[in-house]
Image (tube, rainbow, N blue to C red; front, side, top):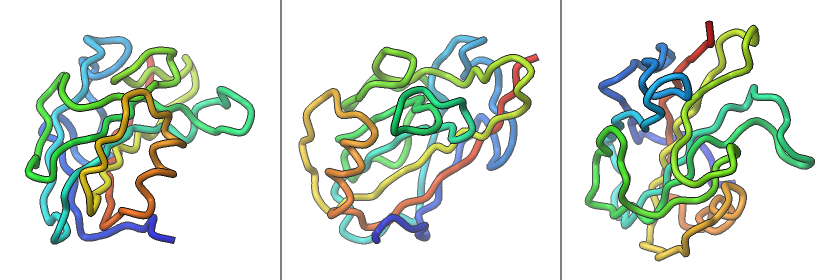
Length: 158
């Protein structure tokens, strides 16, 4: 199984790993994606894929768990950061019924949830079509995975 943490490092200037995500990046704020950057990229990386997932969210559909907040892919291997509110590259559906980023907004009284921003380094530029679900994306990229890691942000509604 290729899905395992690697030396790839993912950071954000908006929050620290296991720190609280500022409101502007949530469904209660401006609902824009946070800035992300990465380093220690595996050699021969040709592209990246990214997704944000809340595994503690209530089930949204049979056969799935958690809530997918963002599916972004076809990111060139030369890219080492994404700006706040990035609107480039290819998106898939989120579990809010749209495409692109939808920010954290756990149910009231549910406590703090963890939001995993996963970055996948791939050995090819796969030129994947738009609209892949998270499951479809993972199935397509798994044979090409060179490394992966994540930054985890927290958010709690008040």
